[in-house]
Length: 116
Image 1: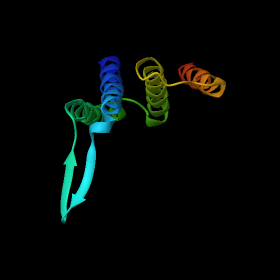
Image 2 (image 1 turned 60 degrees about the horizontal axis):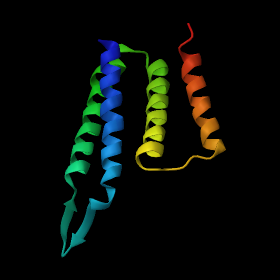
Image 3 (image 1 turned 180 degrees about the vertical axis):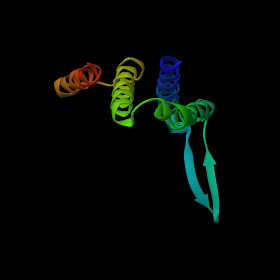
């Protein structure tokens, strides 16, 4: 169950970020005549909801099941790598040699944290 909760967290977190990025241009915040206006497209709304779900899973389940000093760097590192991969493949973002080296260091850090 612990592993499943982490997988669900990662899917919600990364999926939410991807959806919010995919429709980032449709989100608007404005103040007109003293009235606060906020609009967001359907993908952005779904991304926002997924991201909130990931926060709730993390807050109310994951940090209760694991040592914070162990799980936080691992989940954060995996999330960063997955978001980078999504950015490259889905949004055609580019990576330079330093970015690639950084990803390698993140993966190495996650590996070292899991050595018993």
